[in-house]
Amino acid sequence: MLNNHIQHTESLNQNINSELISLLYSKSVARPALHIISLIIFVLIIINHVNPVYACTWAILLAGLNIYRFIDIKKTQQQLEHITDYKTIQRRYALSAGLLGAIYSVGIVVFFDQLPLLNQMFALTMVSTLMPAGLVSFATDRLTFYAYIYSLTIPIIIRLFMEGQFVYLNLGISAVIYVLIMRKLFIWNYNVIKDAIKVKLENQDLLDALTLVNNRLMELSVIDDLTQVANRRSLDETLEKEWLRAKRSKMPISMLMIDIDHFKQYNDEFGHLKGDECLVHIADFMKNNLNRPTDFVARYGGEEFSIIMPDTNMNGALNLAERIHSGIRDLKIPNPASPISKFLTVSVGVASVIPAVNESHMDLIYTSDRALYQAKSDGRNIIRSIVELEKSPKPKLVS
Image 1 (cartoon, rainbow, N blue to C red):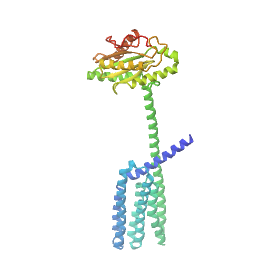
Image 2: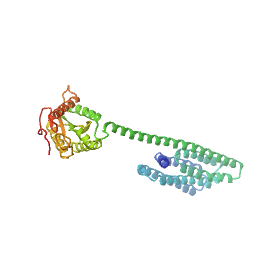
Image 3: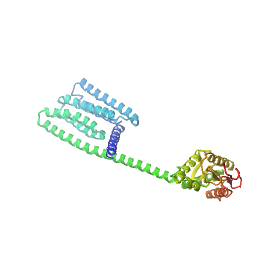
Image 4: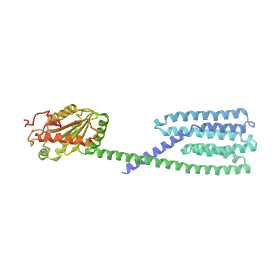
């Protein structure tokens, strides 16, 4: 039990991480484009005050990295459904985010002293806007967020402290506090998202379990426990549906009512356990000898079975009845206490009709049951239809 709980917890954590990484990629296409816009603003801030070659090199590195990120995100999005190794794509994303933050910060550190005070403040303001943008963009992955925010801010904070002037020292302290606030906000946001995904997955697991139970209960409600063919409830539902369809299409529908002859004697001779095995064997035989996939066999009750045959006339029904009747006899299941045969036999009642407007599906059950009663009255081990057509001789002892 403990091992199962541990395995379930591990599996749940893996699924949560997979969902988090999937979200990281699935909503990322526009983010590199936003960084291109930020890059343009940075270039406008520094272009008139620094070496153009250095500025262009820095801009090309940032642009190239964002183009790579766009291509990688787009390609990975197309493969997300088939990816199983989420750790690899997580590390790749975190690495590109870390490089992005590092290139931003190294460029600002290199150019910082060359900028007028106002431009320095503009550059630092841009950095401060990149931090909450990263909090939103990388909200579903701690590794990516930390790689981005620390590589973006630590070099700049160190540079501010190295200036040695009071104003820059205050800026550095403020930046440290700001980073800590961003980190705290990220952790809160990340945990909210993670908990929401956990609830979603747990609810999905619960829904799957309930669906499985409901399907099993539904199956149990229409399947006979012993023989594993349809039960009486399922027979009634199926017959009503097929009856209405036959009535609309004005096509025939047929029914066999089958009773195992002298089954009480079989149970008395061999016991109820063997009797149950016999019923299962008979049910399997009938299920495997239907004419078409639309034919439907059910346990009517006790040792009685019924077969529904949509789009089947009397001749087709009698052919199947003969095959079932002779086939069960040929199984040569011993029934020495039977007065009509030393082997197990069945009596079959056959009914076939094109449903009339004023008739019910219960009429077909009643008709086939009357035919079965006639077969049993005539001595069993025989087929009878409602038109009194006898398709096998009166029963006699089979030696």
